[in-house]
Length: 88
Image (cartoon, rainbow, N blue to C red):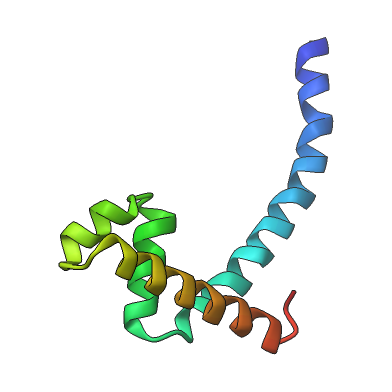
């Protein structure tokens, strides 16, 4: 019983965290959706698929240096999309 009660308190804190995380995710997804398709693809491969730049290069027929450059530029554009909207 004590364990069940102790689990209830963190859930209240967890709810706030979940709301903040969901808000952050919405901002990020909105900013991502405003990028070019190629930028979206490279960021998804890096962040969501967690592929290495070598793996991405192999998939897309690019050198690791080209993947590095594209990922860096795409990330800068994503940051700009977030900050331009004042969502930070």
